[in-house]
Image 1 (cartoon, rainbow, N blue to C red):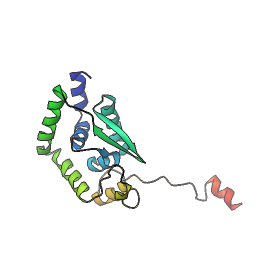
Image 2: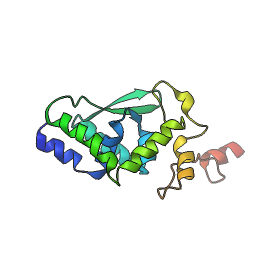
Image 3: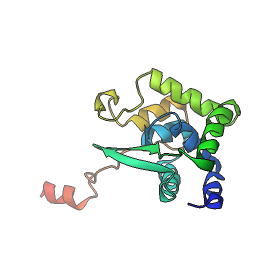
Length: 158
């Protein structure tokens, strides 16, 4: 990846927030979504962009996908990552993300690879969203078509 492409990728505020979170360890999409308080589709789109330019990599663990930073070990990327970790935690826009992530981890609600026991009952993003009071609509499971208007219900009543 070229240096200009590297900086173009990081020029987006949401992608910077994601990199800032991932600089503190791997996270699953639902935890990133919770901290950023953005819809899953938006978070996934930004993660796909970061993955496309090889700044992050993903791993599937059961039903969850965990993201982590790739090796930014040399040259410009290493210096940028060190600067991001040091400076963004002091920024009023980015510091609260790290505080929310720390409280999520401290409460044991942050998902860990290989540990599905940390998942509270029900979809975690729904219960968390209600508690946070996010303006973003909570993701809820799709309703199954069992009402009186569905073909299957009508067939079952015959």
